[in-house]
Image 1 (cartoon, rainbow, N blue to C red):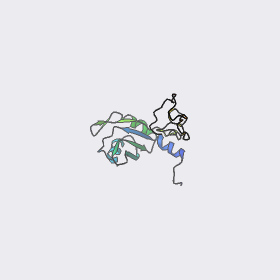
Image 2 (image 1 turned 90 degrees about the vertical axis):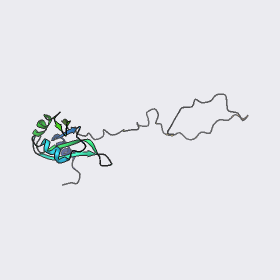
Image 3 (image 1 turned 180 degrees about the horizontal axis):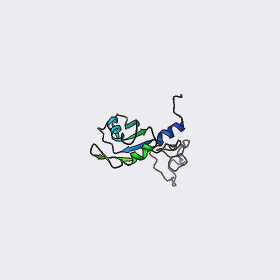
Image 4 (image 1 turned 30 degrees about the vertical axis):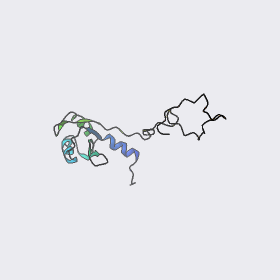
Length: 141
């Protein structure tokens, strides 16, 4: 078996998984598993955390059977630790969707490649010329 799961096996696992939102920060994966045990056999519970290890407030529950997903969707708005859970089918990540995140591609307005340095034009008499180029504010150049 290869180290990295193939795209097909990831999609197959995603089809057996549900997204669970509004999970209490004090919840453990075992408690989430217990909550969804009635739907079918839980294969894995993943509570996502930030870079400091703090829970982000949502989880993914993967079942062994695809049929369990429909049962799990019935638990939408059910309460765990006094908070109503948001349960929906897990969306499959589409590779290539994160192509342009944050900065736009450079052909877009503000992000042109740097131009070569042009010394300012001085007239032979030591004064700036009357016509000056309009200055455009560029914070990152």
